[in-house]
Image (spheres, rainbow, N blue to C red):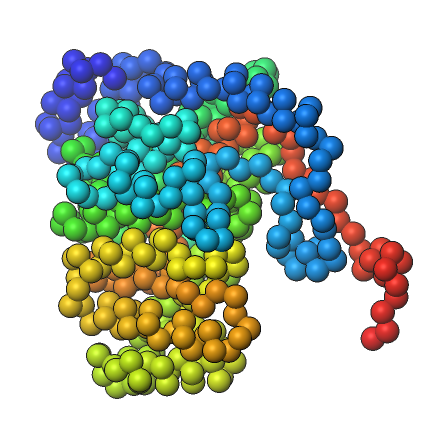
Length: 472
């Protein structure tokens, strides 16, 4: 967007007074800019080199083994099987998640921010995930403007939302609205028109950026529809992507904006094997458009074993407070409660991780946020004391590879402190963030021409014929 057009656009936004006017202004302004953007141009420039790199890797190393497959891996949910290309992030057992090679502390330091010393702008992370390079402030701002121009939600989406039965789960509402938007898919239209496969990435980019731009409003609509009698709040053209989500939900403080920026950054990607990422990739590999593939990923995220973990943490913490009988239990009382939880054959939610072997850096940055903004909050004090108690108890059991807290051990407490107490909505917030990673990777999957995913399956008979029949 040119500076002059940007000035005209924001002047026009300052005069609007309704959601419909806002949508009309966005659509009109979007038509005035080229279909490209700084981010799209930067992405397009990198495609040839990455295509050549992938071709060279396949030629030089295509026959090399990445590892050995065991029966346990096949029967255990394919855990530990390396079989998927995912460039946007990588999970390291010791350092946690790296986004394009950068740790979370490095991102907090290096990514552009809305305010000095504040949390990273997710828009800057989008630039990094898509291009592999850290953005300048101007580049991050250009993503903010691009997302703002794409953010108008068609009126029929609200009609679809309000037609759903009362009591429909927030994740079901969220997934339904994403699917409703599929009629807008530029990729689906381009494929139907016979576009060459070398250009698949272009319309996939358009769909992905359109969807990312609209997700905050979709999520906020679900929130206000479910918990606030459909009293929707229009977007604020002066706010960035994450802050606008907080605003449209009804939380308008600088700290709430900062928390949402942090939350949306750290939940964005977690390499490609988790359910929401892998599902999005799998469905997209069939050339389903980003709306269809992301909705599928969100249906996976809604599962209790994936996206509901921070809800489980809050339920466990609330039960702890009720049973211990005080809002400030001692460490001795916490230890006894943890031991009683384990004695019942239950797990301590928020502790342990399938890959990590140290404290999750996503937990650590949330802890630092709490120490800065809510050090005296009773629930934070409980979480902080549990950090000292739980690893010791779990460590003595001798069976647990990682007794340290993960991201979910802390996020619910922060959300509740700022008034977002509706635990059933937490997975929707997670889903908004996860779009940044999975859709960025989806653009690259189409640019690199990755094939449809089709792993080989086997039967119990095959296993027994190969390794011997087992007596039951």
